Length: 116
Image 1 (cartoon, rainbow, N blue to C red):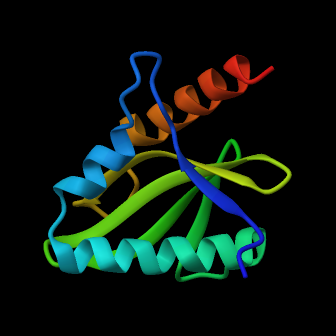
Image 2 (image 1 turned 135 degrees about the vertical axis):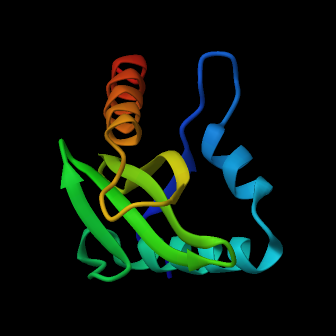
């Protein structure tokens, strides 16, 4: 039974970048994402590594291996049991790219400002 619910961040123009990213992945990788998403919805803040990792500014990464390499989907906990996926990418280096982290922080701030 899911205790948390995950949603895709939606831009003011109605586009959901993470949904578009997931839709662009092959079927095997999409299946892995939905498995990890289900774990996150079940365990939330208690989901351990290696499934997720806290980055900073209350931004976390959901981690999994896709057919084309390491996949990361960044997210934050918005309200009591709501999780928002902000952006996703194929990881090519050991560290999360700074621009991806900054994008997640920006989208978090935007979401929270619109939900007040």
